Each structure stands twice: as structure tokens, then as C-alpha cells.
Image (tube, rainbow, N blue to C red):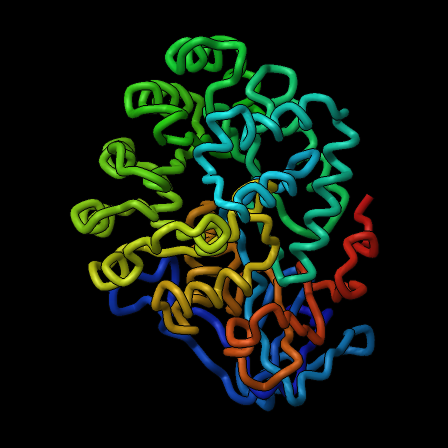
Length: 426
């Protein structure tokens, strides 16, 4: 019998996505709810979840076991943010003001703002500056319940800065609690030094990819008018696949340009955005094993149409939710806000939103069986709400009131709204 190191006892409810792997079709949103519940943890893993008397009978706590009182509270898995651009320097508050006065995101991008303004700021800073900024941003995300996150490069668009970003992600992973999964977004847009997307992609493949691939788990591309088209995207993704990277796509944000057929053809992990996806594209995606990552905070931020969420769900797609946290089009570090928008704008139920931001998001990152559920063998990443009703996580817009955040079996103390008080793992 494993020695219990942490016991969360007498919860009003322990709530988790049911089953294994991603949920889709009729299974999407199916929950396993223990009420009341206790959770036994050994080291960094969950040992048991169930009725308190059964957990205590099978796993009695010893004298060294830490306990957390769950009375009047509900527990859910730590959240998984599977699409972020949290490594950046500078801000784009001025562009936010321009958009509030009627300028479009694409107009700002075409005039030299947008992604390229963040590229300029990120290139100027040191690796230490970038790590510090990322750790600050991760503090915000952890405050809102995110315990696992993907972080992309893509604000360098040259050899030196892309590698600097990926190294900063690795350094931040070792110095704060959120587990990070780096993605090489070398094909984010066309930098000013190159005359064509084809020329730039060949540079990335020839001079950057071999070194970036050792620092990343996945590769991503922005397939959109004004950035890369299908031909350059295919060339880039096929080269990345040869280095063993999982494939991701930004696609159909402003226009349908073949991103979904390309993702299905290449067996990508996900297509993200989909605000411009039509019925045919949604059905094609739903018939595949490529996940649809929806980013409702970005849609709200830019005033975009909603993606066809209900069609995707009803046709059986794997649907995940993420923040798209970035300085220009989604300056939002809160997955619970994305969950609320998933419910209020996209038509997900609270149960579907929870599964989309935990088990399905974990699947997108290749973490099936590792995180995203409250179940034996899973990493003990747990949020304890200050309320007995788990639905408050999405229902209370911007609330994020947690009695405790537990990361890998350790209770974290975090002052409200302040990433500076994260416990150091150095």
C-alpha cells in the first residue's frame, strides 16, 4: 500500500471528466462525480478518489500526511491551456486603443503593427528578460487555475530570437509550478527581412528548424491571408514532422484557406481558431482525429464571428478550449473566462467546457493519462473551489475563487493576482 502524503477530505464533490483519452460525440461532457468525496495522493500522483469512508479505509493517512479540509467545497482537475503565446516582451495597448476606434486587426497587421511589433520588442530583449516576463505571465495563469500550458515561440522569426524564446520557455519550466510544453511557431508570419513567404520558409527549414526541434515538442503555422498559404504551410509542417515534432495549425481565423484539409492530410494534433470555418470544413474536421481548439476570448477581443462549435460537437469532433493568451489579439490569461465564453457564446454546457479545458486540452498536448482528470495514476493537479458547486468555475465570470491550488501533490500558496509569490522550484 502506498504511503499517503496528502489527503483532501470531506469534499462536497470531486468532479472529473469520465473515461480515458479525449471525449467526443455523446461522451463529450460526461463527468464522474463523487459526492461527497475524498482524494488520496501519494507523492505527486492521485492514489484514490471516492466516498470518504472508502478512501480512508483503503488509504489511512499516517502521521506525516498533510490534510486539506474540503467541507463546503468542490474539486476539479487543474486546467490545461493548450494554446498560448505567453512568451513575449512589450505590449500592444496602443493597438487595442486603435481597434476600439474602429481599426481592424488585419489593417493594423498590414501597416506593420500586430505580430511584427511584438517581434521587434522580443528581439530587443535578453533571454533573461523574456524568462522574467514569461514567469510573470505564468503567475497570472496559475492564479486562474492553469497548471499545464503550451507556450509557443513565433515572436522572433529569426534564428537567434526563436531559439532564445524556446530556451526561455525551458528555463521558466524549471523555476515555477506550471508545466510547460514548448511549440516552435517558426512560421507565424512573414518577417520584414524576406520578400516572400516561400523564401522565409526555406530559411526556417534550412537554418532554424534543426536547432529549434531539439527545444520543442510541436510545430505550428499561421495559415492565413497575409501570412502563409497552403503550399508554404505544407512545406514547413512536413519538414517539422521529419524532426519528430507534433503538428498544429492556426487556421480559418479570418478566412478559409485550406487549413482543415491540410491538417487532416498531415495528421495534425489540432486546428486552432476556426472562426471562419464553414459547415463543410467543420464536418471534415469532425470525421478526423484532429482536434478543434476554440479560442473564444480572441473572438471576443477582435469581434470575430463565432466558430461553428455546435456543429463540431454534434458531428463528433474533439473540441478543446484555450485562452490564446497573447499581447495583441487575446490579452487574457484566464481559462475560466474562456470556459464562460464557451458556454455563453459557443453553446457548450458547463460540463463540456470543463472537459474541453482539461481532458481534451491534455490530449492536444499528448498528455492522455497524465493530467486533466481526477483519477488514480494521474498527476495530482487539483483545484479546490470556494464553493460546493463545480459549475461556479465557468459560471462566476472572472471569479476564480479557489480555496487551494494543488500542483503535483503540493499545496501552493499564491497571493491574489500576483505572480511574484509563486514558490520557486530552483
